[in-house]
Image 1: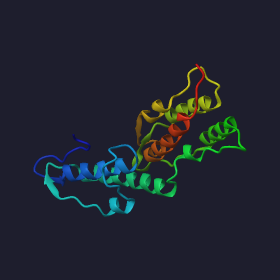
Image 2: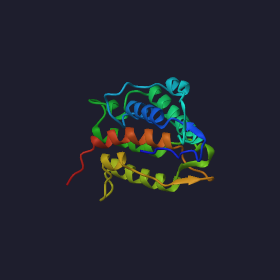
Image 3: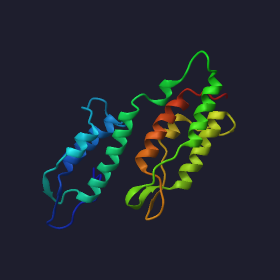
Image 4: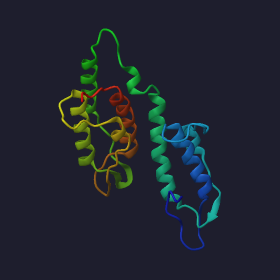
Length: 185
């Protein structure tokens, strides 16, 4: 599998097998891959080095991706408890909790993408509006947790866009919230 563009000609790039192994560990740590892989920290990613290999992965592309993964890992480390686990019981009614989550979605502010590559802001904002309507129970076409986990957005180059790792991390927490939202049939 080619995760990144490769260098051309006789040039050397990062060893694809080593890069893919690290990316696999990162995805596992972020909850997107196999669970039987040793977790990785943001510092581990910063310290990572790869052997040069002729025709390997383009270094700049890998470095930019790893920078985004560092942000995602640091974000996860700051808030290791998933949002859905924080659901209150007892004094706060279930609907009030879902309303508080809808308000949280409305208030979210993603950092701008660096180096001109990020998610299309209009697409993300429209999807968040659908999530809010689902949490409030005001739509005939609710979004499922599975749809949130599988959401894909266009990327933009050289114009404003949302930092991909911020959007992905936020949506991971919201998908857990939607798992608990029983939608009447």
